[in-house]
Amino acid sequence: MKIDLEDEIWSRLYGPYGNRSVNVQLKNLFREWDISVAKELFWEELHHQDDVYPATYASLPWLVALSPSTDEAFEETYLFLSHVIHCACSVGGTGCDGTGPRGKYRGISTKIADHQHSWIPEREWLTAEDLLVLTKLEQWFTENHLTIAERCLSLATFDLMLSAYALEGFATANGSPRIAHSVQMFAYAEPVDFICGELGAFDNHDSSVVAKLYPHIHEASPKLASFLLDYPGCTFDPDDPRQGKMG
Image 1 (cartoon, helix red, strand yellow):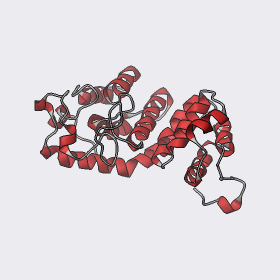
Image 2: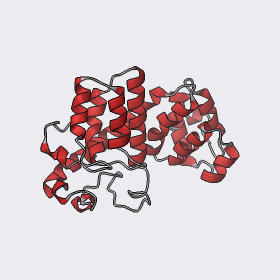
Image 3: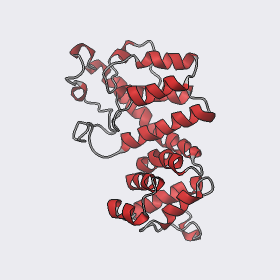
Image 4: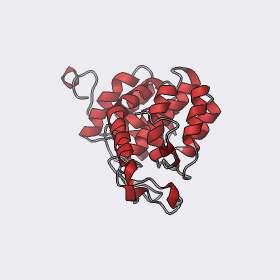
């Protein structure tokens, strides 16, 4: 669901610093993809300390359509998309303390009152008439985020850090934030015993997500795949034909 970039609702679709003409930046990217413009848009206007916003959700269909399909631009965009999916699907509310309102996904509540923040001028608040747009954005995300998260896995490589962030959206969207956090700690060279002590052992659901991940990463990032298979509690064995449908 791509909202027309000339639609006046963009003046009410806010990010971490209120309404900052995100549609203008998207139009600039539409004319010519510029990695520096894209990075500023991603990390300054659409995301802040693991919070995402209505402007984020409104931008996603455009970013999927506009992003080049190869090279640095693809990598930068899909690492961002993976992180957005991770943030959106994480448990808890919004805000630094995680107690703010949320809807089905973090940052896209379909209760208009949840968007009437004191740090946004009242004249720029989303209105009851905007509820249909928010509902459609939520629906678009529901229908597309798993496919996008899977595409992010194509970034998996021998670079552990890159691979860890490429798969965080997929892991969390499939209900295993523990995998998302554990692989990042592993990429930062934390010992397995320490990681397990902090996050706990994998349970059966985590193991089923490992089974889903494994075909995408076992050749591209074998060290990361081995970490997941050997992590305490993981019951998935890729050599066991009885587990072929575990994922």
